[in-house]
Length: 431
Ligand code: B12
Ligand code: SF4
Image (spheres, protein in one colour):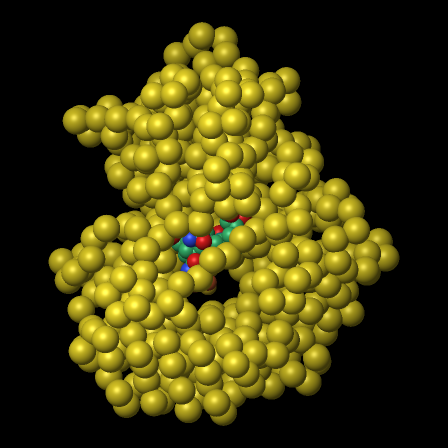
C-alpha cells in the first residue's frame, strides 16, 4: 500500500500575543517525528513516505500528488488536534485516502477524533497495531477488530479502544526509518546552539502518575524498555550526529536497564552527547548511575521540578520533594551535567508566588529553566478534576503557554509576570 505519514506544522495559538501583543511567550520547537519513523519501520513491503510539515509547512499538496497515498497517518499532541482534524478533512477531500490519527492526543482523548474526515483513531503505542491495520486494508479484511484502533462513527459513540501493551508492541527487530526524514535533517537542531541532534527511544511510559501528565495513556500505565541491542542499533543508524536525545518520558525508570545501557554505550566505544529525562528523586537515590552515565556521555538532564513547595508537589502526585530537587541540582553540578528544569506556573499564582519562583530560579543553578502554565490536558486526572473550571476549551491554546483556567491576577498582569520570568530564565541560560 502507499502510506503517507504526516507531522502537523508548528501550530497552537497564544493568548498573550493575541490579547496583549506579547510575542515573547510563543514557542516553536522542532525535532524529528520519531513516532512516524517508528511506525514506518514496521511497514516493510509498503511504499511509505514521511511529510514533516514543521520543516516544510507547504508540502502537503505536492506529497499527495506525488505519492497518491491510499492511507494517511497523522500524529498530534493536544494543541495540534484541531490542525490534524482539518488536515485529515483536506486529505480526504483531495485524494480520498483512508485517514488514521494517532499520538498523544488520540491516546488521551480518542473521542475528539470521532468526526468526519477521520476514519480510524489509534490509541497508545501503535507500531504493531498500525501495521495490522494497514495489512487488513491491503488484504481487504475486516478492519474493525484491530486491538488499539477504532473505526470512527461520527454521530455515534466511538467504539472503546482496548489493547494491553506488552514488549511485543515495540516490534524491536524493525528499526525506525530515519532515512525517510533525511531531506529534513538540517531542521533538527537544538535551537540557539545550532547543534544537530537525533532522537532515540530507550523506554516508553513512566512508572509514576503525575496528575498533569499525559504519558500514561501511551502504554496503558506500563513502563516498557527497549532492549539494549535495539537502542545501540538506533544510535548507530543516526550516523555521526553529535547529540542523541533519549526522548523517553523517564529514561531512568528501570535502574538496572539504565545501568546496563550506560555500560553498553561505554563498551561499544560510542562517543556522543546524551540528553535524557530523569526525576530528581531518582538522581538523588542513584548518584552512581548518574556518574556512570556521565562517563557514557551524559550532557544534560531534563528534570521536572514542577513546583517549589512540597504541598504543591503532593497535590500534583509528583512523589518527589523540593529538597530532592536541590540535592539533584548540587549533584549534577558536581558531576558536570547541565540541567534543563521544567517548572509549572499555576494560573492561581499571585504576586507573592511569582516573586517566590523568581527568587528560587535566581538562587538555584538550573542552567535552562523551562516554564509552562498549568494546563489540564484532556485525559489526565488534572483535567478530570478541573474541567468544570476551564475558561478556554479551544485546543489550539493547549500549548502549555496559555492560562486556560481563570487567573487569580488580572490576566494581563499574569502574562506580564510570566513573560518576565521566562525572559529572566532564558537570559541566564547556560545550556
Ligand atoms: C520529542 C518531543 C517533541 C518534539 C517532536 C515532536 C514532533 N512530532 O515533531 C518537538 C520538540 C517538536 C515537540 C514539540 C512540542 N511538544 Co513535545 N514531546 C516530545 C517527547 C519528549 C517525545 C515524543 C516522542 O518522540 N516519543 C517517541 C515516539 C516513538 O513515541 P510517541 O510519540 O508516543 O509515538 C507512538 C504512539 O504515540 C503512536 N503514535 C504517534 N503518532 C501516531 C500517528 C499514527 C497515525 C498512529 C497510528 C500512531 C501514532 O505510535 C507511536 C509509536 O509507538 C514527548 C514526551 C514523551 N516522552 O512522550 C513530548 C510531548 C509529546 N510534547 C508535548 C508538548 C506539549 C509539546 C509542545 C506543545 C511544546 C510547546 N509548548 O510548544 C510542542 C508541540 C509542537 C508545537 N506546537 O510546536 C507534550 C504533549 C502533551 C499534550 N497532551 O499535548 C509531551 C507529552 C510532553 C509533556 N510536556 O507532557 N515535542
Ligand atoms: S515523572 Fe514525568 S513522565 Fe512520569 S508521570 Fe510524572 S511528569 Fe509524567
